[in-house]
Image (cartoon, rainbow, N blue to C red):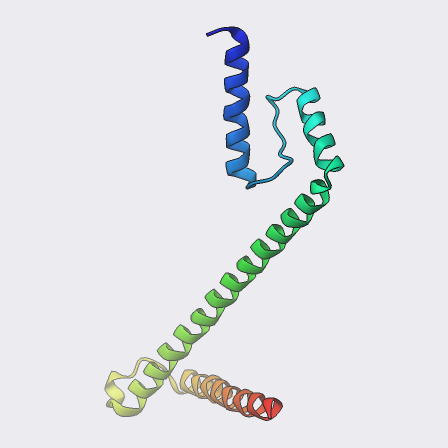
Length: 136
């Protein structure tokens, strides 16, 4: 294997790695490929009009990735709030049905729990009512 074959093999490996990292793009940065080859690749992309299409595709991918992250964060917050609400309802119910000797919250803490649960239930009921009225 000659030195030129080694360079070509390295360029092919780098191009495959760049495609894996950046997706299938007609223009991917590659430090191993010489400036002339990179410039030629860009010139070809500009001449056949695929450079703008590639830029649009990459922008869409970035936008979609951002939306996916926001969606995951929203789901994490939602399920965290739901878990806290369920635990709070369980604790409040426990304090309502068990003897006073089993209670572990004082009257002020129970009052705070009632306020929070009442607000959460009222807010949920009102948002459901408003959502139904806005649709119809």
